[in-house]
Image 1 (cartoon, rainbow, N blue to C red):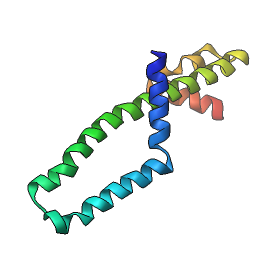
Image 2 (image 1 turned 45 degrees about the vertical axis):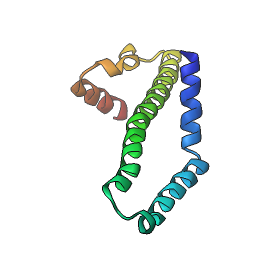
Image 3 (image 1 turned 90 degrees about the horizontal axis):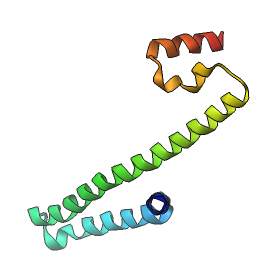
Image 4 (image 1 turned 180 degrees about the vertical axis):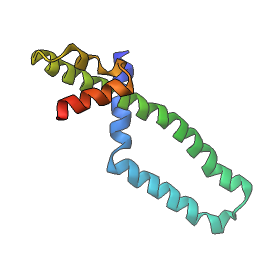
Length: 111
């Protein structure tokens, strides 16, 4: 599982880099410049649509995995701080209570 986590970290780091953005822009520009050469046929449009659809589908899961891990780590840190301060146990498990209870706690804390 750790190798999967490391791979996701490397993928998201690289895909969020200026190099990946430059590569993507270069790909789209070269595809647009190819329109006069190859024409705007259905096959030519599929040559961009199919890979980008597949890539978008896969990347949505990669990004979601990275976000879930980051959020879980952040919640763990915050829970540790709450526990260290000896705060109300209800705050530690706030994710499991109802929306109305969260609103009531928010009002109690901010008043």
